[in-house]
Length: 504
Ligand SMILES: Nc1ncnc2c1ncn2[C@@H]1O[C@H](COP(=O)(O)OP(=O)(O)OP(=O)(O)O)[C@@H](O)[C@H]1O
Image (cartoon, rainbow, N blue to C red; front, side, top):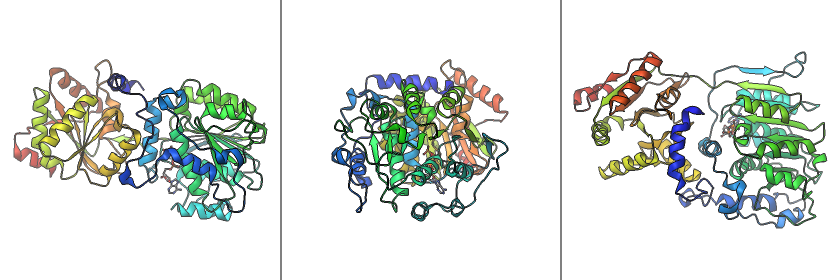
């Protein structure tokens, strides 16, 4: 997106000197008490959790190792979209609220449109219904209400679905895959492609959770590093992986017979097309599948490139869209503080500190370097702050955000790129230590709104403070003010009475 590009470019530059692979999941922080993710695929592959059925042959013996990331092209794809998506998955533990209406475009406009308000209405297998409730889902999400009946219909219907992250897409297609497999047939019947190893793993975890009461169904990960012996025929019913490996497994190695596939899922289409080669590989997989195979494609955004790709993957689709909830500045009090230098901005921030930490605050900087510097200075002043920075691994970032959400830290210093898409509902103070600008130095209104805006539902009052340290930034501030037709008032941070006024 153009608006991100300046900050992205800065981040990319700053990252250039660092080792590649910082976005890979390595060992999870120990305090989480969780196992390293990298060992998960082998467990999934070796333990189909079925006592009754035999573990699959070679796949069962395969110890999945995440290879040296520096040499693996697919794993190395250091793409911000994929990282953002993973971060969202890692920190999200419930549905995002969305009050918009679902838009539906049916392949056959004359056929009745079913929508369900309960999981019972779907006539799921009892063990799957148990799995769904076991995950704490009481009723289908907005997108699931319409998508699930379509996906579970007979004969199977193709679907293209677009809705923002956290609206229940993954859970929906996982349920569809689990519903469609025949547990008695010991060969792959569902393929699911994801843009990265880490994203595939997250989906795999949902399959494992939802299929907990359905041990006859097992899954295997088609990812680099999961090397199978030649001649092996997979026995797992669900294969989830990245397009390159999946293509090799279907074509070159014939571990999978593509003609037996009944459901093909392409997840995160918008992230997928950002990676070179993934589009072609996905299309090549799709072409190997039988005509009656159900094709499902999901995306968080729907720009034209995604749409073109979607149409090549999914013939005769039903289309479901759920628009993002609009953000507004209506309930936000906006201020600016006039300073002459970075140090003065820091000083002003320290004056404000007592007031802003009544609630939780996020402080945005333009670059990692400034964010790092600021977090360091604040700590030296004895303030407890958390830093979210681009050089952290995604899992580390998720841990920082989790701590912040739990209120263990009151202040989070971050760069825009890092924080994009993160909803921390309880944050009521946002400080723009640097104003958001695009690569040409123009105000980045979209990012401004995204940082401080609130969605209708969580229309809580908020406070935004903008640090201005030059004529140029004053000009940007004025333009932002004009753009939104919302007044941004001046605040004197040396005046204690004024500070008290804003925090009240
Ligand atoms: N019907 C439901 N009821 C309650 N929670 C749900 C329901 N469906 C999904 N969730 C939960 O909501 C969160 C988001 O769901 P899900 O991951 O399926 O969304 P998504 O649109 O695929 O987003 P992402 O791409 O970020 O994963 C998850 O924590 C999931 O467990």
